[in-house]
Image (cartoon, rainbow, N blue to C red; front, top):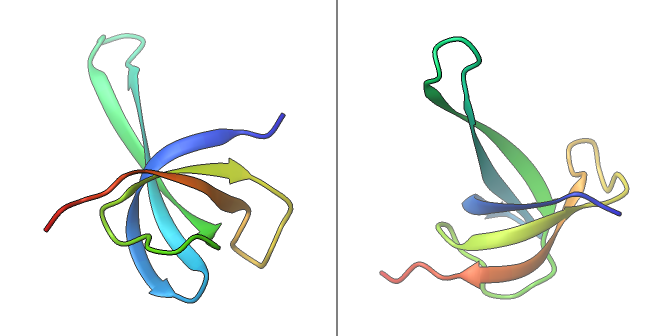
Length: 81
């Protein structure tokens, strides 16, 4: 089973590639403070109409290029301007 993540599109300037920001929150073991960490992942995009600010679901896949290891499954939410 491949890993799936939900994130926000940060960049769509490349052809058939989007950069997705994945955030995860966890509690510090000693201080019990909630810490937020993020990672930017490049994902292969065959779908039409995905823009910056959209929420998408990405899935782990075989290596497509040097940096691309994910592909876009679906668009969940659209940002209105």
